[in-house]
Amino acid sequence: MVSNSPTQNKLNQNKLVTDIWVKATWEEFIGFADDKNEKFDEKAKFYYHDGYMRSEMSPIGPLHARHNSIISSVIKLFATLKNIRIVELNNASFRRSGTSELQPDLSYYIGLDFKLPPRSNTPINLNEFPPPTLVVEIGATSINDDLGMKRLLYEQSGTQEYWVVDANVDHVIAFSIADGRSGQIDESEVLKGLKIELVEEALKKSQTEEDGEINRWLLNIFG
Image (cartoon, rainbow, N blue to C red):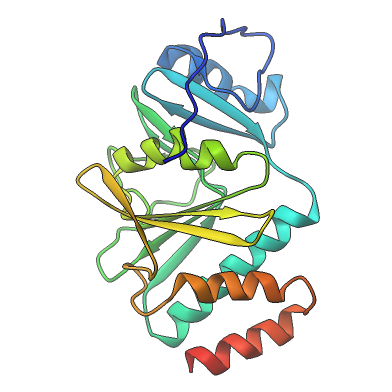
């Protein structure tokens, strides 16, 4: 497993340090995360795990956006045609007060029994609502962290499956999570029958094909 060691950098409440894990108390983290629209770029993403916080600026280029769109299409088309109950959340925050916060690029509640959180602009309270079934992180420069510290965060979050998408090479690394541990899988366990290699093939097609062509190809395979 690729791992990044958290830094011991001193936290500066007046300056947002991005793309690095910084030691912080929960109160310090909340000071950043909940005031981001007033002090910092409102597009900043925030994570907290084991006494450390990380902030990232949401990518604005077509590489990340295109991968996000294709992954979303594959998952929702598959679930629709297989009659699987699913709800997608894009860039939503999930918070377990005092201990952790996660903000994946894509997250999904899947199955018959999930309780849908209320519609609001506040982080989803993981002390009241279950964590998402599946989370997806799409990275170009953050891939090592996605496989390292964030993987540890998601292992402890209670989510059942975690996908890391390396946007540089159209590669998807999927993990099944149980009992605080994760292991790599070749086929989704929460979307039974969806092979990870097919997700990668869809990403590769997106280099030269438009969405309609890709969706028709997916419909033919899934149907």
